[in-house]
Image 1: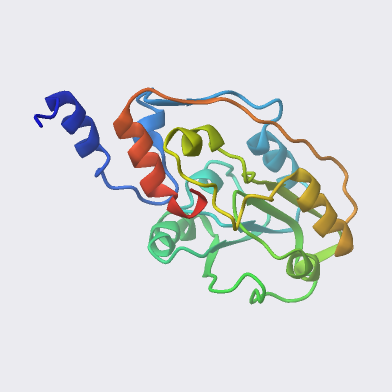
Image 2: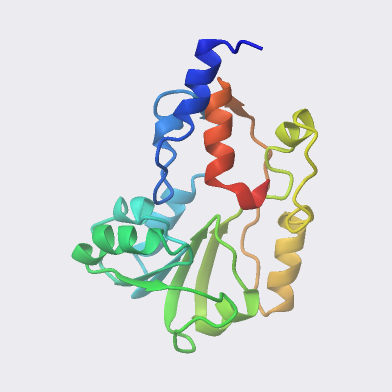
Length: 214
């Protein structure tokens, strides 16, 4: 069967290199668009940073997001668990004074008890008890997670089951775990924004970048 040349070109574009946690190849070109949330993780993180003496960014990816929150007035560490991202993050963040630490196991972080006034976490796994251990008394943990139903419609369209490891992950589950480990919830929100993909190449690129979730 002869394939449409445009279809093949779109699929070939999905082989473009993905590094750090940078989706600009499909997001900045308008091939993927996400509905805005009612809150801004970046704005909240930036404001909290102004009052923190020591801070940790969990799952910094290639350091793209954290680098845009400078100038830094506090002592900052960043962790990353995906080995290919670690040298990318170090190249971007260490010149800014950020210490980048590779993490193998998020149940045993190599930090002292109560070391951080602020811990931020965008889309990174965490162990609530361990975050509580390294957070100072009255410290703040800010996290924005991806729920288990993220892009569930795409899974449905391709007749692919949801990843059972994450299927039950929700705001309710996260809050329950945090409370059980000594946290007080100051604010909690959950939304299900639309995410639109405009061609098959963008879908394949996205799934290749985050295969663990789908």
